[in-house]
Length: 324
Image 1 (cartoon, helix red, strand yellow):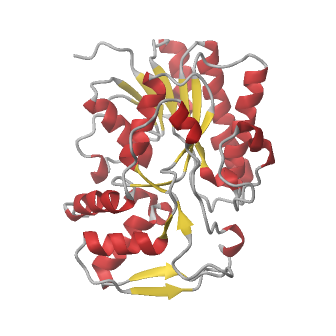
Image 2 (cartoon, one colour):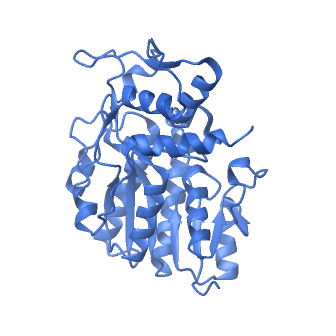
């Protein structure tokens, strides 16, 4: 029996949003979902979304219905790192997020929101989530810039005393797991690897164009979707009082590690072909990301993160059941 007030979730039909709704279903937490109405995705089968509110209608709906909310989890955004329309990103990722924050602040509703590891740019300053470093970060693309600007705005609001009762933002690193196929080119390398290996028996990886980094040894902090939803619930339930935190495993792994894990999970012989990184991507390509996780651990989050090998194995097993 559901006795709590609902959690309002923006981006509820997206990858992370849908899996968070699913985790709320399992915990018997009622949800109010915000996203663009779409045909039911096969990846969403079995998830109860309930009422879905269009993003443009949200604030009118809230002002009309005045729901008692347990919290707001703001995951809705344009997550296309190749999007170059800064006006669009400002509207969708920055201005809309400001409205969410203001509503949460005015109505005393706890808020958790999605930032991004893209704010770190090329990693010149490392991947430490010390908030003093945030103003110095230089994202490599407009998407990362839009997330950076909201992080800075949130900290400014805190200085002015205008915040939700509790609030936390999370810089998601490379999230992978079931439910991301609709993202197309923006889906994780794990999904692209699974599909390529299924279709051709081999996998294409980008060559390295950086001295000192061997082909396939570009590194990312790959974090499994189930770990992400666990952290989001932790932030609400503890609750974390305030702050912007990294959300990765704290351990960078190579694309070669990921490839080997995927071949092993699929029980296929390893066959990798290295191709040139497209010229258009090279100026914005990150050769290394690794979340420093000390601050989240100090908040009390001590659950071990899923290893890349285990996560890929679970994900591949789920993909093998699906027919599209």
